[in-house]
Length: 159
Image (cartoon, rainbow, N blue to C red; front, top):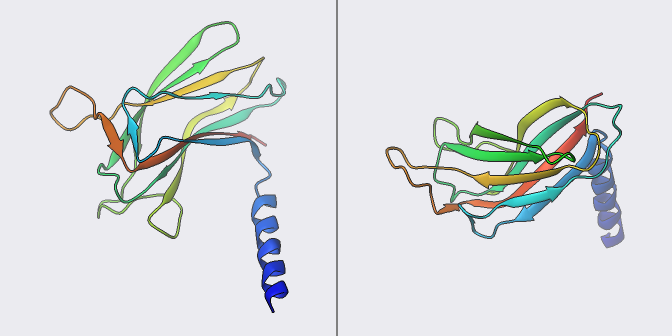
């Protein structure tokens, strides 16, 4: 019986990971229990086929300690020629009733947040992510953003 359950679990894991054919790059980095406002999460992207187009996503894992309805990020895409394109992005993180959006069965949710589409890479790129959340009516940013436990970046084939 135990071998049968193990075999079934192995089959489910294989099926789960084989269904993700669009994934080219998918990596997470831990930020601990809270994402500090001065903490920059960086990713060295692999060299990709310059003839193909890719879609880019910021990925997050958060839990019920996340206290806000939205999330502001500063995303910097560092190009091989030294130029850096910086975007300030806002994402909705909670439903109107306050429950967190995202995938997951427990209190940990995974969010795949759209960043850019139809991107062509020519050389080695880097991505730098920083949280820029502020409380209403306050100028300084939130020092430690509770509830965000991991920050990631994902690249998918467009086709």
